[in-house]
Amino acid sequence: MTEPLKTGFRFEHTVQFTEAEYVHLRRIGPIVSRWGRAKLGLVVLFGLALLAFRWTAPFGGFIVLTSFGFWLLFRFSPKAGRDEYRQSSYLHGPITYGVSGYGVWIEGGPLHAESAWSGVRVWHSRDGLLMLSATGMPPVYLPEAQLRDAGLHDRVMALAREHAVEYDSPGAGSKLDKRATRAEATRSEVGEG
Image 1: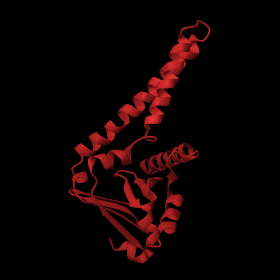
Image 2: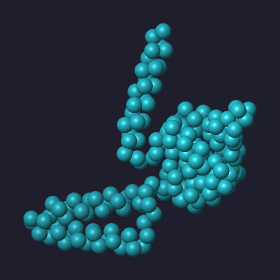
Image 3: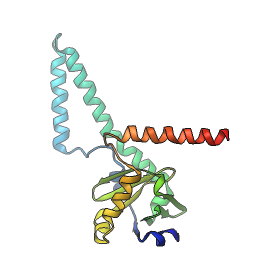
Image 4: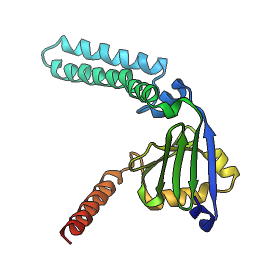
């Protein structure tokens, strides 16, 4: 990549994930503590108690079904991360994630993928890592502390905010829908010409 030299910065980070670390990284929602599971159990017991009475049974049924849905979510969400880790050979060795003024990239085993900033769609910060997700490639994970130490965190975040939306933000759905509509319009114009 020669383009990053024009833009003034380049940052790379090499890491090797264990299966447990990768599953933790790819999880959906928060990790439920023992106290959280106990609270969920108490809510289920309350819902079951409400099922005993005719007038409160619908409310109790709703509580029990909703609690069951949350239990399923927390029970099976790690499965996707485990399956992805086991099926992706590039995750079983060192992985180099990189970012520059040009874009983002990932190199690991047989995989080499890169994207310009215009292809980055979603960013998210969690557990000290900045995740940048571009179309058609695995997400890029960058340690925020090392970005700060290198004096690049603000520059990378400015580019992420300019080109992508924050994961699960209120405007994420509408902004991504507008981008998809614009891309479809561009494809149809090119196809007609």
